[in-house]
Image 1 (cartoon, rainbow, N blue to C red):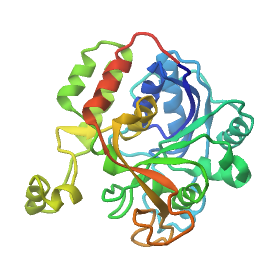
Image 2 (image 1 turned 90 degrees about the horizontal axis):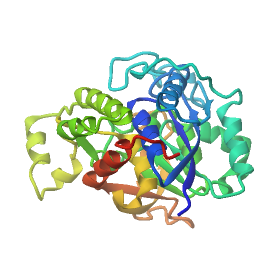
Image 3 (image 1 turned 180 degrees about the horizontal axis):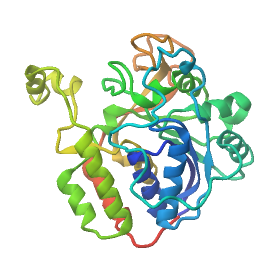
Image 4 (image 1 turned 180 degrees about the vertical axis):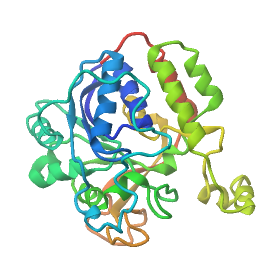
Length: 345
């Protein structure tokens, strides 16, 4: 069976790092290139982190450094006061716990590379995006016909009921709302994996130790990164009543207030790669017209998924939106691939 060929646009990041590892060890995928963007950290750090993963695993995958700033939103300082993330004590850390890279990024800018790679592709090529969509949006601005050349996009971003960057928005779309809107308004076939799905595909601390016990460099490093995520991504309920309600089976609150518990954490970006390997890891996909709030207000960067065609538009379906995932299958994919001793890329 032919491998699925794809480019990964990302902002490493602990979960991006595990996504890269998963891609490199899967016998079903061929990772053609990595492009980096400002997101979890500033782009010099996300680029260095991508290079660290590639070199740590001994892979032969080119890395292209991308956009250092969002398209426009940071021109109003009060709009994104906590961005860019220069340094932060969180689930990512500034640099991945791997040796400093000696390999270098490619001289070509990521945006120009994306345009050339897809416009000149002679076989189907997929794009997986796990960070802010700045690079992709800029590529579409440079070459609008690019939207006809991308086989499909798998996007980790947004949230229907979930959010993590503000009371309304998920981080990737929040960090560059205009870029997200440009991509959503394009004709590219899109599968969006929002927090609603990634929060349901967690790995527990016990499973993390099982991963570490596999003993391969990738499994051990992924386990270390995942424990950092578990220790830093704790859930804070607004009230004890909310905690009880989201743990009461059969209630609407169980669905609307859903969040993982504190002995586990999601690996958001790795789920996007897992979907390429085995689409059945996503158990519920809904058709929707997807838009992005770019107003700059309290809902800035919010993904607005119209599942009911309230716009009564001519093109009611612009993306498929994941609502649920199979955590056991996701963990099994991680175990199977990261337990390998040889790269499959």
